[in-house]
Amino acid sequence: MNGYPGFRAEIETTYTVGDSIIPGTESQHAKADATAVVKPRCDVAAEAGSEKAVEFECDGGEVFEIDPEDFELGDLPDASVLFSVHLAD
Image (tube, rainbow, N blue to C red; front, side, top):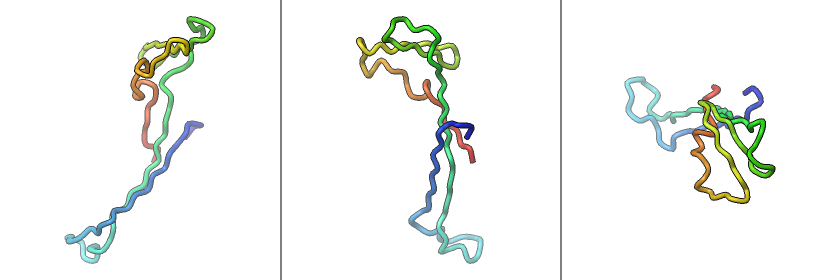
């Protein structure tokens, strides 16, 4: 996962496969597992606008600033701008 956080999920259906063209599988449950890796799409800019504000440079050249003295939750970009998630296995 190259140092990025990963999250593993395992799932099994609560119901059986049921009627199937493969003999002997009628009572089996479907199962799946995967690991998702979360990677940041933004870096902290080398120079921020003020001492307390933090400026982020994101993939695609998008830049935004968070100023704790003038902050509203609606000012944050969508999480898909900040992070990418992909399956590792």
